[in-house]
View 1 (tube, rainbow, N blue to C red):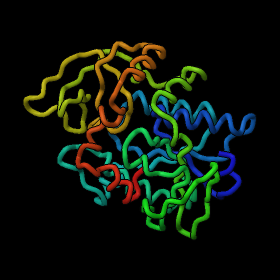
View 2 (view 1 turned 30 degrees about the vertical axis):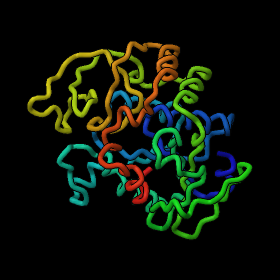
View 3 (view 1 turned 60 degrees about the horizontal axis):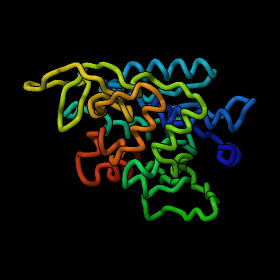
Length: 281
């Protein structure tokens, strides 16, 4: 965080209110304490976010007196720039609002909470990941990062995505949350929720178009391992109501959080890599 502050002119932190971006913000606050962090926040709002997460996002921004930029997918749909997908998911629609916001605000470094253990395309990322003038990612242009030395050089119009949590695991994130006593949105812990099953996942009903005919809503005790667009983020059956219980559950799991609960990553074998090449997180 300090290296980016010293090397770049207009960095920004991607902040969704999910656990990874919460940990990333916590690290940034520690890096510059007692001063304020020299970055603003950016959230790409799909319009189908979990209300608990949006409430947490706004409360955090107010608590730390931060500046929040919001790029709204709904605005792009209303203007006819983007079209709703037949399946109702808006996660793949985030790329255009994100890249246009980066270009219009002239952000030259963008912090993301991606981790290499999440998905095979993210495993190809460096900590400093160069994006071209169209915000596109080319894995062949990745730079070596020997001895944790990072190269932030970029041409005008290009920017660098920065992933401070690259080498963390999901378990590392939860253990850090427990050690630091970080508050999280309640949906990360087991609770009663009305859900329905689709493609082996428990999804939350909502204005995005679920459930369809034949999909039955039932009340179950679930929690979320990751949060995103409600249309493609599944819950898991869980009794983990405390941090210790969540950590024990994660330690025993053999499925990554995205592999178990993110329908947008199952659209194709290379769904994440295709989106990343276009400018996605």
